Length: 212
Image (tube, rainbow, N blue to C red; front, top):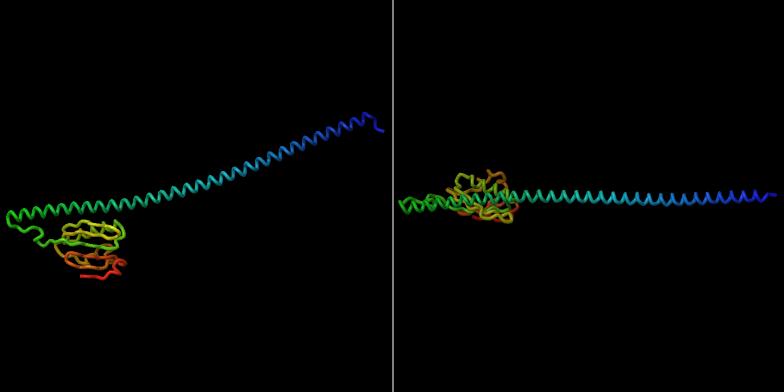
């Protein structure tokens, strides 16, 4: 039969063991909760990194689109400015021509000499359909100005691919002369009259009937 002292020691040992087990269980619960918190933080961090990467990609794509739009607009602006500059040069040439005509008229009234219009010069409208860009319109205006019988030329209109030039010439313009222009062989003759030369690029001219 166990003594009271032995029984007491065994009870105390059981109590101590139970206390240690409770402490271990509490620690285990704490560590499990801490591990769950770490996993949640890791998941949140991954989500934040994913969203940040998506935002960076979206921002880069937006910046690229803005650059492309700005470059396209700059090209269009340069082409328009070049065409306006050509019109201004044509206007200056027209003013010079008008000054010469006035001077010729004054001279004719003063001493009987013939003015420039009476010396074989005449006005002719050059109309071209389907001109794709302002750069091509300016190039075509420069080409017409370079023809040997052209005294001066100015742009009157360029809208929706329709180019109208006003030229002063000493001799009649011909369709064949435009073959020397870089895209001239693609142009069709629509109207050929002393005061009007009407041309069109292939598709624009296919549906039109030549006249004159």
